[in-house]
Image 1 (cartoon, rainbow, N blue to C red):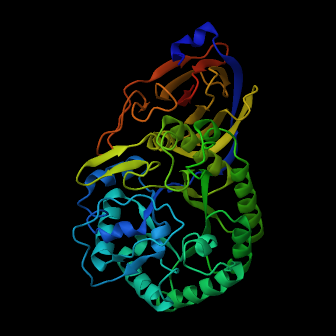
Image 2 (cartoon, helix red, strand yellow; image 1 turned 120 degrees about the horizontal axis):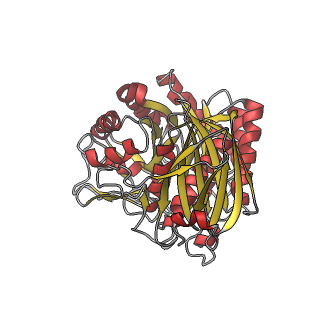
Image 3 (tube, helix red, strand yellow; image 1 turned 120 degrees about the vertical axis):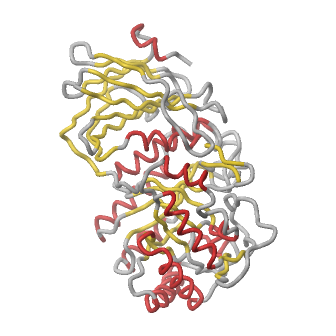
Length: 466
């Protein structure tokens, strides 16, 4: 990998970036960042609890106002058992469910919900809570909603009534001919049951897996019943397909552009905000050698900024346990560790952006070199740079409204497939989410321009000043 210090030698492809601080783009919400876990994790009431301070530290590091989403495939097999007792022995941390089959039925107890509230207090985050429309009655779902709403109070962003209903016909929850029309009728029945018991309940949906047609029809038909739209996106899959590679992960995605288009169309027609409530690199639990590598850090950071630029209000990266793509891996007993994708989210958090600004890149990168300009809430101008090329180092000239100096923190690893040696600002994330930069580069402008190198497969956070 080319060293950053070779900037002055003129090594690498040449690019020019012009940042326009007064050409404002979308505001990035304070709670844009989120993590997602399987609902069945609540079968262990000690996992999301004030006792799990280490995990709460990983959440806080990503933002003081993030969103925890509980859902996944197991949300349709999690059973509200308010006075029940936890499973013994308690399950280890539960990883992402691979789908395509019924999941084990696990209890969700009142104790788990109360402990979850304590965990949210400790982390500072709020909650999107998945309800079981797949295998529970509307009455039972309403009972659960009453208790969750009372305990969570202002920590509750919204309920989601189901998880990936467009796949219900594949996992035994509905017959093979199950379609959108049947879903919409059933969704409204559950919606009415919840609202009858919790009139102030906020709902989101449809939380579809990938059928943009369902998303658009849901928005058109039920726009008055939800506060925002939710959808899922996985860049690759299935993991058994040998063509699902790092190269593919870092390449532009037509599928993602189609999702942006559908979300934009529904937002324009209905005014409903949009959140990517579940996402990651490869569905089916992820792919080793791809989902758990440094490449996922660049992919994740790029996705976050692309979503913000497209007008999304937030994103939740799915994970849990030792899933291949989980941002935070581990258990309470063994401890937790930040996986590579967490470092991409950390870069986003460190930027502390308030609003995107226009940043124009000149040079042929074919989508492999991206830049995002932003103006912080204090007016500080920053740029995030992501060189996703596996082959090419880049030399970048930045012109930004008279900026005279720049400080740079690098997101780096020895190789794109590295699973452990990732650093941001020269530092690693501790086992309780602690992190502080140890290496910051300084650059001075020459004739109004700042020049720095971007080694292949690397990222950087650039802070500009006068």
